[in-house]
Length: 344
Image (cartoon, rainbow, N blue to C red; front, top):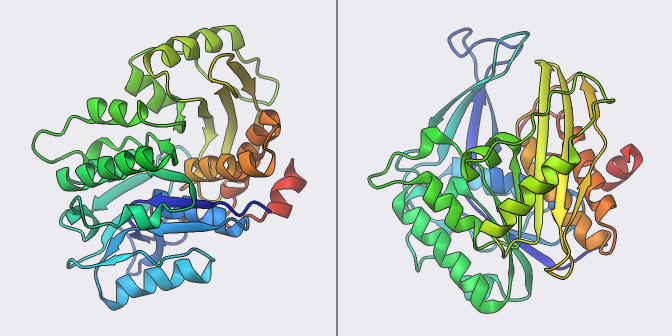
């Protein structure tokens, strides 16, 4: 079982939602679960048996403490969580139903994590013996100081020879601080990473380059691989450091039926790049698609250690992990390695 340390860094959130597909304006009760992109990745990795450390900043309140307790229950190491600030970030989630799209309402301003400053986190201690540091665009979106703290982490990871994993995670409603430039900031983060994940829409937005559409309605859909390869080649010229590009692709036939696949553009030596495609999975009975991208990234991080010389299995494992997340309520992917390999 892989045991090299993976560190994830980002904001832990409290998610509120209604049961039975009620709208946020209906009913009297809200259920709550903890989540957040980088925490989701950490939980997935811990569930798969990996050695994972999660770094965030939380208020020293019963709600903040309960969040850390939940992560620790799931096997995530939280020894370097910072305590301070007045509130935990939250969001309100309204699930999709039929032809109605899902809705997310954020309430994250002035959260403890958004008030992070460079110098607060002891990265030299945390990244000692780490294999990978995982970050996402969300942490750079919530405040200017949080963005600066993220780039500080990237600088020290480079200094210490730690590989960087990056999820684009573009959330347009979060970029509110003065001078925010999401495309420039997320592009700069992409230029600093060794492996990355994004969905097809995020790739197009960030790189301002159209790609062949994924319009599958069944598993026999033919991918335009030559066009995709040319697309990735041009992208790699723009961002030459990254050696693994994982792109998730989804077509929502209905709220409860999604077609899901992924592409992996990679090189083992930095010179010869290969484009691989995963199978198309027809998920008929989607329970909760939250955190599906995080399950993709965690699947790849785990699989590249467990299946070191088999990129196709790494890709297929990542897709299988993400597929199973669609069946699990909440943000966390609690699918085990046995369940994922059985699906493979």
